[in-house]
Length: 585
Image 1 (tube, helix red, strand yellow):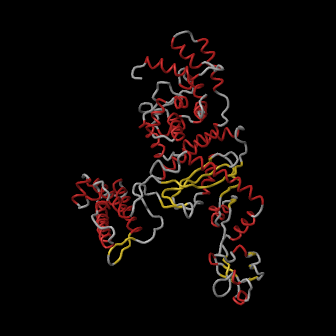
Image 2 (tube, rainbow, N blue to C red; image 1 turned 90 degrees about the vertical axis):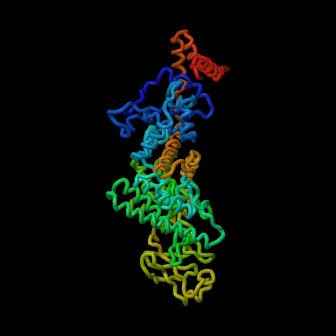
Image 3 (spheres, rainbow, N blue to C red; image 1 turned 30 degrees about the vertical axis):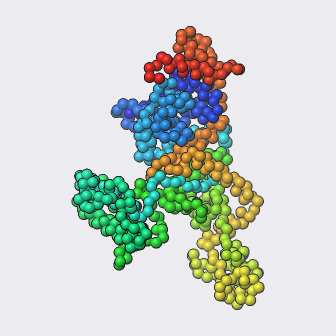
């Protein structure tokens, strides 16, 4: 059953007693900001769908757990450390609004709450609630009022959590998964089933390559070992086919067998070449190659010719005026940067109830197909067109193409109207005799015949973009686009470079949390006056409280700041006095 928190602050809650002390510390503004606004940002009813409405004992309030996940991302600590800090760190207690001696949640409670968010496809819940509050605050004047938004898009690499292995061990891992599924379907122990089928080497926990007693420098021995592994895989796939015939189509057991067998078959297709002499390793890297059995969604990717990585890409949309992260997506590592670009723009409009007027991006978004997609959607895209080179000869951009007149003029001033082909094969053709007599031929044509100039299917859009980026106005757009670079750097600082979890759904949850923290820390830089008011309140309470030892202790810890008075001394004194009165401190 859904547990809820009272909006009223407790008299002995950590933020009431130690709020001033924590606020006075260096680098604690985010904790005090959360203490002030936690009831506004996260509400228990926003997570009600994750809980039973009328049965069971009351849960730990989800607003408290959501706040704990935000703090965990902010401090980049483990689940165990997050639990310990919630129990023993005054800064966390002040932000969470719990009592000084409270232990607000168990580690498993935090893990289960996170799992429920992912399971119910509510990865964006914490991000959405925080963005809603920050954007509402922005419309009130803290960060701007305009409902027309200019977005900047970019991606960054996320290194996957799964173990990346070579083909031998990848086949071994996929075979082990199928063996486990078949043993479970047969109701037997995995080790016993594997031993009966002669497949023990795949499930004993050791590296498959480490068990192969061969000379790895001998090509023939490597091939024989590979062929034996492929033979075992083929035999397993046949056993799966026979087992599925005995199961009801679409049942959980049938789906599990199909999924495990599908992974094994995919590895065989992508990495193995069948020859009359036997199976051999396929040369090159297959498109969309699966590289890990612990995270089959990871892919080989690159952000530049020199930077290769294994994992995912984070697609990020940022409001260039307020610097808020407005939408995120997780792409496979081998996906183009522009994939789902329109989706994050639509997501921004939906989340903020605004109109996106312009989208700024780098050259990775400047391809003709992307521009056409934005144009078809009625959206404005400002992105640099990639530089065209021609191995030292005149590039295409040195030629003047007039699509309306159907003409093309070369650097030497010659013009042709000979437009051939259609679709991707459209091109202008210069006559061989014209190019043969040209004084610039050595700088233009390397082969025989005349020069040809291809015409892109989106040539008109690319021409307009090239003309715009040559104007001074484009420099302003390029400078504004740097906003997304800064926010990506902040997200990387919050840990998204390395995935904490396996699977794109959980990685997306991690990116959403980092985006929520990035937005909240941005808002925290101007969160207003709160603790001075609290100090004045407690000055009044201290005067009316009485003279018991307990109230005296509270008066010392909550007294207003006095010049030359070190509050840390009183806080230390309070902890010592309480330590002597509580067993097991």
